[in-house]
Image (tube, rainbow, N blue to C red; front, side):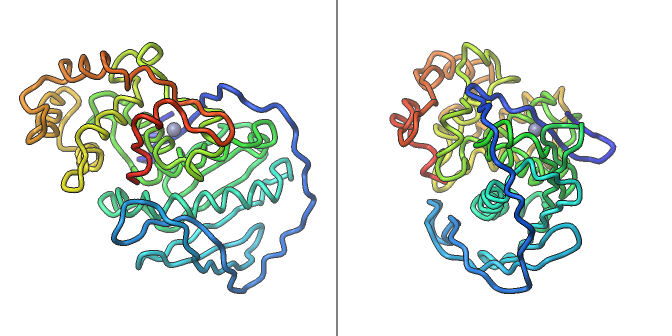
Length: 312
Ligand SMILES: [Zn+2]
């Protein structure tokens, strides 16, 4: 869904192949956070390496009306996460909310460092967990809404938050300057796959990167972005960042994207090829067909052969 009037992007209905139907217990726990400094372990991106490493960050947690606020400085950037529980009816457990906090601190600083500095994305994010009848999950400006019953019914779909955080990072892509408006969602799902919480611990059991059979063109394909990234990014060139910059800068109107693709491919092995030709190369590759599903503690066929996630 695209709320143009808010200059923001949005929403999603995650494709859950194995959506859980178990009901988690509402904890009934009252909010205990006080103004104090706590230490939490989260994955962040080291300054000198693209590979996430386990490290310890200090998160200051304080209570506010109907929720709490967390603050930490990572890589010289001060972030905050506000948990708004004004419309929370305890369908989402406190344990699940704690996992969503971990998702934020593991993922958002990495998204921000790679993309958000360019788009001037917000560093203060508000997560509203609300038992209201609108979207399962959506994002606008620096706000993310997750329906209070979503994690009750889909207990491990924490990575829907990664998708929404990618929308916050986009910070107002305008569909008039995208070849297809669907690129807003394709980018968010690219991020969901690449930055999946705990290296896909939950994501890869319940959500798949669709094959070329199910997403048969570049308008619909998330995997095509992952393939372009795998083939064209290097320590000297971040193809997806370049794609992000073109989408954010409103440089090319949707009818002029042949020029956008030509710019993106310039200096790469695909220079001079049309986007349709590049798509054909993708569609005929095994990358386009390998399964991204993994069972518990496993690694998918796709990531076993093409270990792109470890780059980030
Ligand atoms: Zn979305």
